[in-house]
Length: 303
Image (cartoon, rainbow, N blue to C red; front, side, top):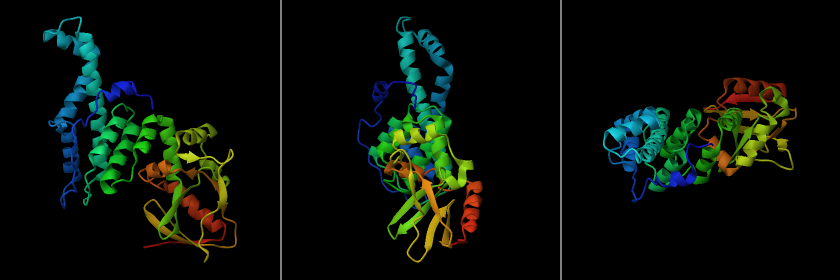
C-alpha cells in the first residue's frame, strides 16, 4: 500500500525499544482492557485521550503546527522541520489508534483472550502506522482481534502483504473470502476453496488483473497461467464437510459432476482469509446450496 512516509522514516519510530512481556488475560476481562494495556505498552501515557490528541494534531496540519511552534518560541527556520516530525508522528499514532478501535469493535464482549507478545505488537504497529485507508485499517483490526483469540495465527509476512495492498486489492481478496468454503480434508487438515473464479458462477468473477495482483502479492498461487481444476475434496464415502458464514454443513454427493476451477490460497492467503469471514456473503451461500442441489447433491446443516 502507498504509505504517507518512507519505510526508512517508519523505522525511526520503532515502538518497542525495551522488551515488554505479555500474559494471558484474566478470566472475564474485556477486550477493551487488554487493548488498553497494549496502548500503554506503546506509550506509558497511552490512554484513549492520547489518540484523540494525536488526531487533533493531524487536523492542525503542517502549517498550523509550525505556527504553534513559533508562538512557543521555536526559531522560524526550525519550525517547519519540527512541525513535519510532529505531524508525521501524530499521523502514525492516529492510524494505530484506529486499528485498535476496529479490534475492540470486532471482539465485542468476547472473553478467554490472550495478550499478544511484544514481537507481534511491534510487527503489527510497524505494519499499520503508515496505513491511512479505513478499509485496510479495519482488516488490521481483525488481525489484532484474531491474534487475541488465536495466538500465533498471523505472521509478520502476512501483515507486510496487507500493508502493501491497495484498497482495490483488499476488496478483491475480501470478495474471494466471502465466496469461499473451508472444506474438511482430514481430522487435522482443512482446505479453503473459493468459487470466485469457478465457471459455474461467472456472475461473481473478479477482473483478471485483480486475480494476477493477488497472485503477485503472494496470497494465491497460479498454476501454469490458470488455477486449480478438480473435484471438491469429498471423502471416499461420498460426503463432504465444510463451513461457511460460521455454519457447518454436510454434503452427500449425487450423480452429477462437482468439478470446479478455483484459486489456491498460499499459507499467507489462508492466514489473512481466516480473519476476513469465510463464506459470509448471503447471496453466495444461497447460490452454492442451489448449485449442490442442481447437481443432485443433498446438503444439511450440522449442529
